[in-house]
Amino acid sequence: MKIAIPKETIAGERRVAMGPDVVKRLVEAGNKVVVEKDAGKLSFIPDEKYKDAGAEIASSATDLYRDATIIAKVRPPQENEVKALPEKSVLVCLLDVLRTPELAKNLAEQKITSFALEMVPRISRAQSMDVLSSQASAAGYKAVLLAAASLHKFFPMLTTAAGTIAPAKVFILGAGVAGLQAIATAKRLGANVEAFDIREAAKGEVESLGARFVEIKLEEETATEGGYAKQVSQDTTALIQKTLLKHVSEANIVITTAQVPGKKAPVLVTKPMVEAMRPGSVIVDMAVEQGGNVEGSEIDKEVEINGVRIIGPVNLPSTMAIDTTMMFGRNVHSLLKLLIKEGELNLNFEDQIINESCVTHDGEIISERIKEMLT
Ligand code: NAD
Image (tube, rainbow, N blue to C red):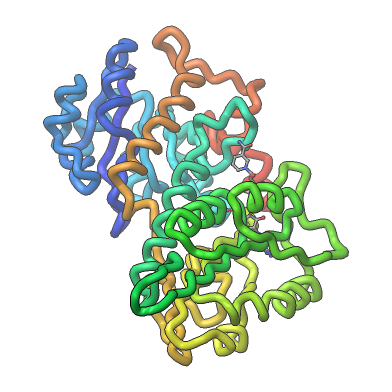
């Protein structure tokens, strides 16, 4: 079976769907892997490494896609890319269809069987396929480094001949995968760390990393049965903002990671809260691309309000491409092992992972979630 790995086309995307380690294992299992020329260049993987792993290198889209059964990508295909995909092929990538459900229509028209990696259920059996976790973890780590590099202050407590330096205070909003990695990274650098999340389950995880959990008693249900956060009412958001003011104003660094799948990110830090912070403090709004957790943050920009710098980083996993490409590839490989049986494509729609992550098949949108969004 032929597996094609195209070069990513979205500006600023350094990752590629798999590294040579995964290519080697797929080739050893009897597959043919074709990688587009320079696909790994921005992840610092030269074509030679893919060749050594047993891949062929294709110089054109025609050569890449000819007779391909599976196409593995990182980001969603753009309109012209969808048209280049061979009919009836299987596409595996981050489709982002919860935000752009129209893409599903194009994929169905082209008769592509598409799998959205972001819709792989968060069940134990699918942990090794969980790109949201592997990539969010890298993003949480990098967000702390960005903040540390921008802060004109030490992270750890220092006892020096010039006196004692107090440790930096870091406040993490949203303690999911990215937030927990941000907590762990800030702790390793020696900061005092506090965190908040609307899911009660996050408390134990935050505390197990040695950080203090800020508790707010909320009247409404904040988590779904699947363990994700729910979008909460304006009254609840106002109560959260009011309680967080003290913690935000005392922090040297605030890192916000709060998201609700398929919805605009909640605003947790308002402009008056930013204005209450000390000049020289730094905020990193990791949800800036989903609408932002911080009033005034801008996508891919640094904004300064009263001496407080607000960073709105874009695609942090791409800035860690050496590791994130490798992790992404291993996640994709785990999913492929579920789709391929004895060298043949074997789509068992009774399987929860296949059922929930497959968006289009046989010219139809089969995902109930996406169908609902389009009606
Ligand atoms: P996410 O990226 O969707 O959101 C990040 C965090 O923001 C979440 O912790 C969420 O609770 C929080 N949040 C949302 N609205 C908020 C608000 N108004 N105020 C404060 N915080 C808010 O989430 P994620 O990191 O992808 O993971 C979320 C859930 O998935 C967690 O329960 C996590 O444990 C679970 N998970 C399970 C598995 C598994 O079992 N295999 C793997 C990964 C994650």
